[in-house]
Length: 298
Image (tube, rainbow, N blue to C red; front, side, top):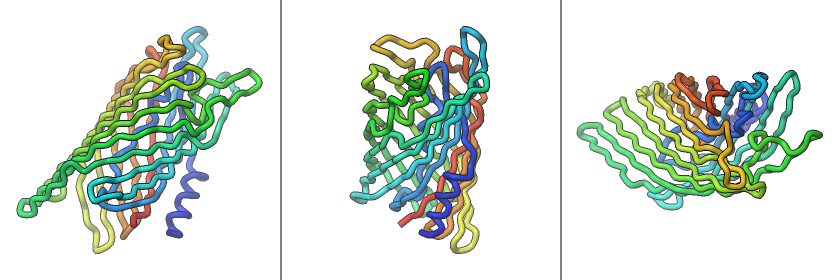
């Protein structure tokens, strides 16, 4: 546990920021969670995601740079052998640079809770063949601040630590493995509500697939390298029920990463590189992202 605490502190304080979103306020690159490790075990840990965006203002062509760092405290606990509870509490740091002026916010984000049910957990030992299917649903609660202002007035929704809305979460995960080789697939859908400012972020769907290979190094070490594909799509945002221009879009990305298991500790890193995208009517570009995880299983 001591090693976990030290690692959590280093991830949150040493690693650099990344980038967010501007003219749209859509934060399309946030919110994706990769397959969680050792599905049959409880854990507590941290997930840090660093995202970057660049955009051009559609009216004057000014370059805008956004950074977003989300550090989530995660808990998974089994209420039943087939039912798992997952809670996530993020701390968000966001900044926006426009013509040399930087606006920055930080603070706790929105608490998310969900329940997942194990539909299928099949093992064919004679062929070393395994299948796993889980599905679940949950809520994202408006616990983070969403009305921060500066001298110019209320900040853009994308710079707020929280969305201010009650959102509904749905997910499914299916993995199949033969001996040491496998494929993991994830589907996530977030239905966003309207906040007190009558603003609603667009609903978001995320589809991910990755191929992995399981390597055992001695008694206590395991390594799992993986490569994959990621698709993210967000609908247009709405203000007072009206569609907001320069919002929404989609991203196709490739991913590469590696997981390391040492006894009951889990470390992983994942690099996500966009290869095709259309964000904010073509006025925004998502840059490569990085995700780092560390968990203590129990």
